[in-house]
Length: 617
Image 1 (tube, helix red, strand yellow):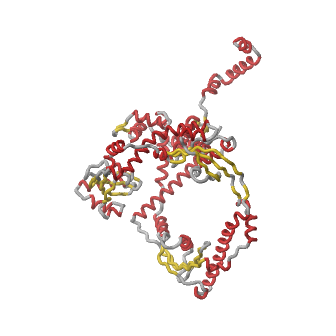
Image 2 (image 1 turned 90 degrees about the vertical axis):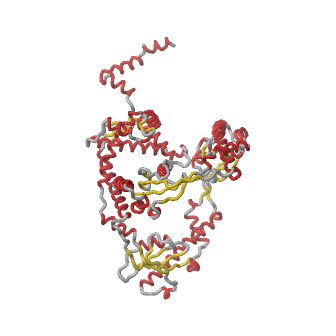
Image 3 (image 1 turned 30 degrees about the horizontal axis):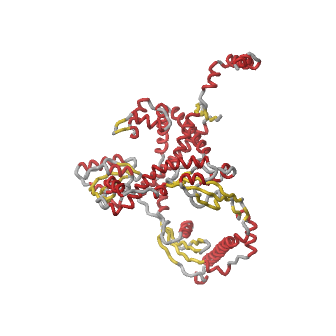
């Protein structure tokens, strides 16, 4: 072999390759050759600045994990990987455009600024102090190194400065806020008369010819889609738990172990809630000063708290255990001593001060009262350990098997059947799209393999295979005749009701009364809001879509469906009240300002994007 290599190295082809290398070196230099092998690939270039493939792939992985975490039952097969990659690349391009803009405006963070930001982040602290090891571990979990994290933080911070400047500079005119509130709080006076479908039943008839014509015109809608009949094995934690025996001694020991948890602790709290806005810090400082001066928490809650229900009781929330309040609120409450008042606590509702008023603990219930509950808990705990092991065995066995009989016998599981599964799914567990997608894949449908083991619920896994495939087929007229009849009846009833209503409205507009038209009697409604109870949503929609009537006049409208119709007479429009000093006015003003700021920032981003030179390989 060595002799062959030596001889080939002296041949014509080898000499040509060496010649090309020499030419390349003489024209472009060694850096060009080495760079071609060692340079980091890019996925896009923005104004000459590369976005590296490594950064792109890292963020693709992070975004995929984020989307999986938002699923009720995480299933990688449900991810649209092409869309994830597209979204991530677009975000990287936009981030680079914004970063370059910030640099052009002279916005930057020094290394000491970055250090200060990192050391103040709670997620990197232990007992209130920055912990380097926790920082490194957290950054590694993000798929980054410390240097990459620092650079990402620098980019995010400076671009957020511009964003905040644009968004916070937006203003909503008070008159616009007031106008919107007047519309939002508007009420209307109207009358209504209902026409039931029985009033037109004699006018509605569907013939066999009409059914045939509808079937012929819409034949494509009357197809039975392709279907499969499947065999499947289900492995569930609950089923494993049912087969686990718990002795009386084990149950007694578990009861003693759970004694502290079973004695439920409840805490009685009072709170004072203010809006989380620009003045929150100042307002909270004033409240704390007044508390320190001896004013009562109850009186201050009545004065300041925007939680009007508890404010009337001095902020009292009563007794509650864990799992009731917002996580941040609960954590602060259960860290307090009796009579102690917390620091400011921010939740999605606003900023709270919390006072712990009392603590009570319930007695541990007798074992006989909770025997079944504890037995089930302990069995499920034991089954959880077994479940992971059996799941791995089932996944391996089903992957290697030609059918489900072997895996079922090996693990003592039952083979079940399901019929008529379409690509839209079927009855559980085939209401899980990941499992259905596997069932209709080429490997399973055409080649006869088992599906992968799919997690279709909380500790419930399924493996399946196709038993029989059924082609799509046209449904006969006899199979769908009654469905078509019902559809046509509903359509003709709606049309007949609509005609009847329009006749009534025309008569009313010409000066006739309901009695003259034989249409029943008016039912009056005064000062009804958009969320009026007891009135059909379709009627309310019609009422608020009508133009304001002139003084002394009436505007008519209709609301029609296949069961009934309504003639609506709008008599008056009452403008909503506006309290310019009220919380609703402030909140709506802040909301409109934020919307305008976001719109302006979006336009600014698009302007920068349009100016940028973007290249994709």
